[in-house]
Length: 237
Image 1 (tube, rainbow, N blue to C red):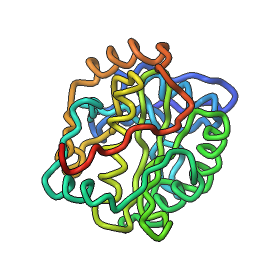
Image 2: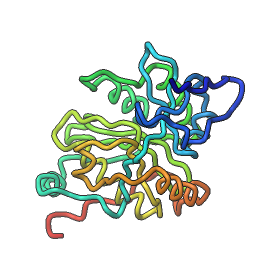
Image 3: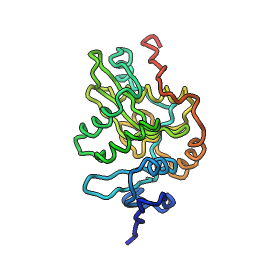
Image 4: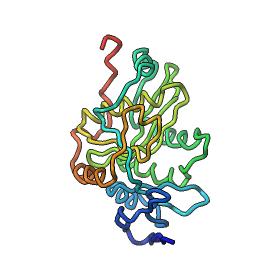
């Protein structure tokens, strides 16, 4: 039976990603902590935490990896209608705490977003590393959103929620177009889902993902103040 390394909370280190298990796919290490320094180190190397309240901290680097290249986002006909109707106003970093808590609370199958994770990612947000994107309806209600980590020209999507039809997809479209304008190269979706694949995400070998990641984590984007300028051009386009 393959044994996994237990990480020392006092020592910042991860094993090489090629040592990750094939079953369950990508499980790399256990333990450690959720300090902001460890989290930043993990993302820079294509590793992310994913665990439940009754588990130790589990660290993952699956193979293959699901990515969305910002200029490849696909807009289906129904989503295009929603965008043309301008049902949602999209912002960034206006309600991070609400977004991450709604991501945790609205998942029917349970959540890996524990209170410890919420505290750590909120601290990353205060440091300017974690960001939220919000969709507001015409009544000013927060009805969709996602949050993730931005390092260099890579954005690592963590979770999203939607309280109204297509709200989270509208968020993803705005995020992809804005990141493309800022020179970001990838949106890391971690593991595939039918929802992401329909929006243009694709799976690539982990080795290829890590090669792309190394090329962009130390390259600053063209803008990093996270004020969204991109807007859907309208039904005439």
